[in-house]
Image 1 (cartoon, rainbow, N blue to C red):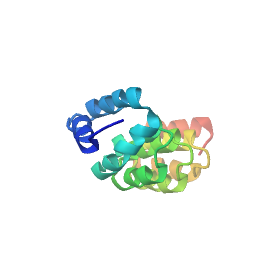
Image 2 (cartoon, rainbow, N blue to C red):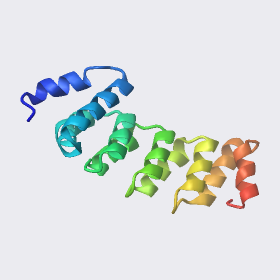
Image 3 (tube, rainbow, N blue to C red):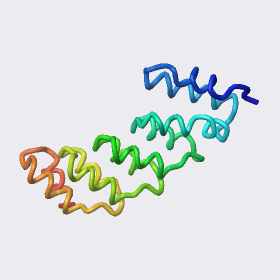
Image 4 (cartoon, rainbow, N blue to C red):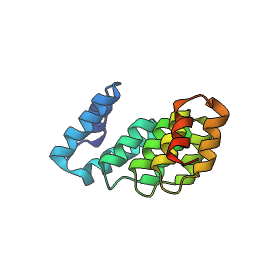
Length: 148
């Protein structure tokens, strides 16, 4: 089906623009299907260690190795990408991502995580918002919505 795997991988992943790489992979998937796309590109994507690309890949391809991509997001991702991964990827390790949010997240990140993620430690997120920025609108949202 695909003759020279390395050549194909190099062509699709050659662009330094992340959106173009995603487009190239999506385009490849249209012709060869999800399973073949994951087989050809997952290892290369994991080698790149880009948390945004890993997040996108697991949300686009059900066959992707969620746990492997999750480790990249946990290790290199921002609080925002950890929130999105937890929100959008079924089976994400809520407590591991929550730790990142609590340690590195803004008031907004903590508010959104507490509001949107089932099993989140709402009181801990409320305390982080209070400690970091008691005057923020997110502290008032916690109080107003009664989630703190």
